[in-house]
Length: 120
Image (cartoon, rainbow, N blue to C red; front, side, top):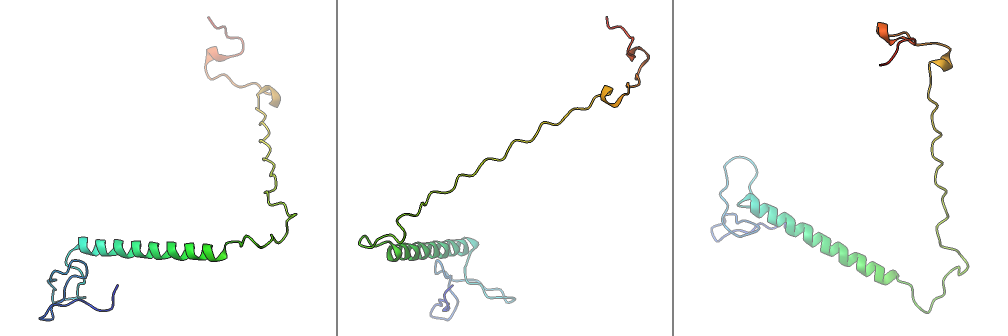
């Protein structure tokens, strides 16, 4: 935000975004914007200005650090390909347990659920 606050001829504070007069309440901090939309637009303008400055600075830095065509690379025999990484082995399949593997037979839940029951 700017350090100077815009004011009209009478000394009343003006909106920092649109320039209209701000109605101040008698309590609390003085307002810088007349509406929330003006405050939001000023925030968006600041963010856009910061992004532009950052983009220009990085473009200038890239241009300044770019390789000069007349210079040789530092190590021409160096292989710059990334090393091959082996994929991890798939997990081993889990063994399923059975009642017979435990040497037991399950107890029937119903009378007709036993091993000698017949299915129709």
